[in-house]
Image (cartoon, rainbow, N blue to C red; front, side):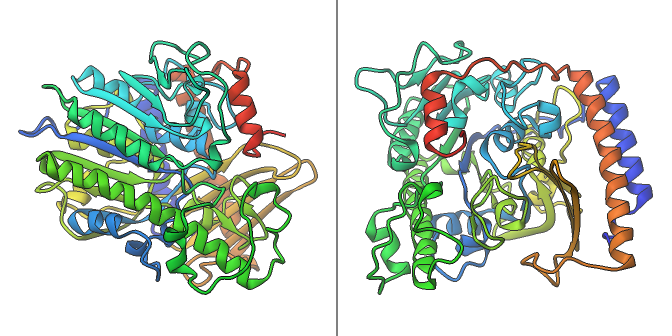
Amino acid sequence: MLDKRVGRTRWTVVVVLFVVAAIVGVAIRGRGRGPRRPHVVFISIDSLRADHLSCYGAKRLTSPNLDRLAAEGSRVATVVAESSWTLPTHATMLTGLAQTVHGLGVGGRLSDNVVTLTELLRADGYRTHGIWSGPYLHPYFGLNQGFDAYESVMQISAGTDATYDAADATGKNVIGPLHRQSYAERTSAEIVDRAVLALESADDRPLFLFLHFFDVHYDYDPPEESWRPFDPKYAGELDASNWMSNAAVHVKMNETDLRHVAALYDGEIAYTDHHIGRLLEALDERGLASDTLVMVTSDHGDEFFEHGQKGHRNSLYDEVLLVPWIVRWPGVVKKAAVVEAQARHVDLMPTLLDFVGLDPPYALQGDSFAPALRGEATAASLPAVSRLLLASAEVGEWESLRLDRTKYIRVRNAARVEERVYDILKDRREHAPLEGPQAEESKALARRRLDTLRDAESRLREALKTSGTTQGALPKEVEAELRQLGYLK
């Protein structure tokens, strides 16, 4: 059955309070400004599964620098992504709102009515600098709102400026055709090089530095020195290029090559981790580490045929939903601690605002984990709703509700609606859905909870007037990039 610790009464009270706050625009108060206002480095590592990090229990030493960060700060043990692809998850990270509220569940552009984390920090005197790679962080989608500087590190045609003007809503006039497919590039080194320049150009204002690393995303093509330690005896000929259309990568591929795929993925993690280590060294060398809040997370994971699929944006199983969340701020965040409560992407923005002492402009959907990360309180596990709203004939629409013990999944396509409930403590791989009267009762309870939440989200969406997000034509180079990555047919 669905976890009784989050009972009907508590769920109803939470939703009612949420709706009331949303309608009347009541702000959730922060802690108030403390004596220290930190620099903030927000790192998003695209496609990174938590279970492939050493500090999250991976047997391979893939992430010594992220492990160091977790040892010097805290990590949240279970973090559930908003979705299994990049656009809605990053929008949720930067807005504290679910995709059904901010409006980027299937595409379009972020509404100007949504106030981003970046805009709040800039209004409070922060210098805001974003460095990104990968097509869904393109300014066309609106995630550049509030950035003083917003730079791409993807390779582009010679003579084209890679720096984006935050005032240019679409980016059409400042980017030329992409020179190579973004999944074939290695960009982590360039991201850190530019991040170090941003640190060196500091002025009297605190810095908010947002870094989007894309190398862990397929294609998996790390330098050999990054993957070879994880598969030292491999002598095969598997080429992991053109990942999603590669006929050699399929559900029945031999175990040797499949293990090599995992080694390549881990090699991408190790390569990215190495360059994050360079950034941490730069903070140390410049005497900034003690005054900088560093937060690392991911937008989603990747599948390696656990449920018959590869890549992501296919499902809402845990292999694509469970992501890391590591936070370090020396002297403030508790050292070498693990917050065991379940968190969500919607909790990232409230937590950062809490740390810097700012109030949100309206009721956000997430909760602050700052007290738990400071070691001042024990966080309660929160119900995590994830959605995949593409509504394609092949994938369908997915919705999941994950609690401490159970997880409900509903898949809807033109033919039917399918519901499943898993005991995720006993069946961590989600291979054996529960059956019988208890399973049916759990499904019915999940449907009621989700219906109530949808109603609340609808009210908040109307209050924020985000229903009409612009969906103009994609710039040609962005459309081409998405097709090359397999996101568009």
